[in-house]
Amino acid sequence: MAFLDCSKAVSYLSEYPAKDGLSAKELMDSKVNGGLTYNDFLILPGKIDFPSHDVSLDSKLTKKISLKTPFVSSPMDTVTEEEMAIKMALSGGIGFIHHNCTPDEQAEMVRKVKKYENGFINDPIVISKDHTVGEIKDLGEKLGFTSFPVTETGKVGGKLIGIVTSRDTQFHEGDQDPIADIMTTELITAKSGISLEEGNRILQKSKKGKLPIVDGEGNFVSMLSLTDLQKNQDFPYASKSPHSKQLLCGAAIGTLKSDRVRLAKLVEAGLDVVVMDSSQGNSIFQLEMLKFIKETYPELQVVAGNVVCREQAAELIAAGADGLRIGMGSGSICITQEVMACGRPQGTAVYNVCEFANKFGVPCMADGGIQNIGHITKAIALGSSCVMMGGLLAGTTETPGNYFYRDGKRLKVYRGMGSIDAMQKTDTNANASTSRYFSQDDKVLVAQGVSGSVEDKGSIVKFIPYLFNGMQHSCQDIGVKSLNSLKEETEKGNIRFELRTPSAQYEGGVHNLYSYEKRLHN
Ligand code: IMP
Image (cartoon, rainbow, N blue to C red; front, side, top):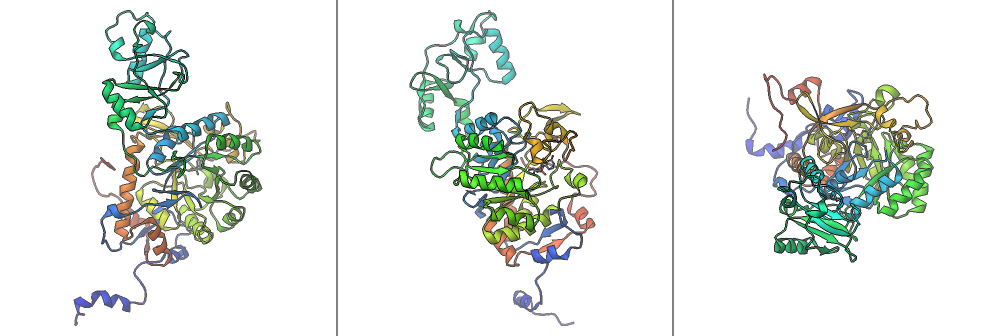
């Protein structure tokens, strides 16, 4: 057989009737497996002609909010409170604070995110002069740090009267003595409003470890710590309001009448974007709430959902949604599909809703079922602008709850908002978790989620950069320099896909090893 001329291999490609692999539409139309999950397909590699760090992950969250990364933390009570929301925003994403708490508690968390200034400790442990030396030694042992500001009220906002450090307590023998006897009262302080750089300068000049910040009346406001400054990270991708330069913050509400009061408090606290938290978004309750929000707070961005089909999306788009949240039954803690017979495999849901919503310029968030970096890339390729994650972020330092040990592993609780545990957290507010599932009036609660535990994943400050770098490499393999071009080239049919049979999935995982350790990053 005569071979073709090797130098003509590239031009010869144009003679093929079709490109290798499938377009996204062909992939979805193939319906070989019914609906597709992220694991059911792969993206074919493209050409690498740029370094991975050139890849931009700029993404749209809503019509008016853009982020430097597509990462969003879910409004779940084991995932997002203020600590997570702060770190997510610093890392270039955004957190949505859950509403399984009182409106005041939720608003206070939003306020803390909006007031956060990188480097300043805004919520330090403060003591009163009546604490004993022994109590402070115990506190130091429990918390792992030993310096505490002392105020008249024993709280932030009280008049600053001293500071106590390990130098004061360490060699003091009278554990029953009041802290007032030994605290340092000659204080070097700084006025609130100073910049981090100024504070840093004062700290270094003072040769102290801590710099209390006070207001005009000498009331304690916050603190700078030398050790924190030394390890203070730079956050070049931080998500901030363009005018105030405050971190962006999201929060969830339900669709009951009482949620209007809740929302008023959140808006007053500075909320930038609200998500309506409902497992089935196409309801008259949500449409009414959407109308109310658009009329009352025209500047507030609203994400509506959850939806998994075009018909659901159309209603919400027409009612003014600034973004959509896609997913029903794909969450790692979710039993909705099993119990309700309702839902959709997430790959198919994301493709169908995004294909429709993108025509109207409404950005979509793929919510639930994200287990790894590859899933994020696939969700974006199928048309979403960002991804909402619960399980992938659960177990990080910034999630609410304490670590505990079982079978030698360090764990934290992660639970569905439709789990009995979460729905029964009615001590503070009876309508948060139950209303997500329209169950607030039920005598017998029907669970749509489970409660479990996940392993310690360390801090978000390290985990998000891992996701970021991983996505840059993923895009490089596909041959696209941005998430936007990943979506655009997919739409044009230039990004090609392949279905995976069960044995292809087996082959694509680690196999035939006696044992191995799966370390995801250093
Ligand atoms: P994950 O990232 O796969 O763990 O999924 C998180 C998503 O699951 C959340 O953002 C919610 O949309 C959804 N979800 C949260 N709690 C429940 C539940 O109890 N049942 C069903 N879905 C839930």
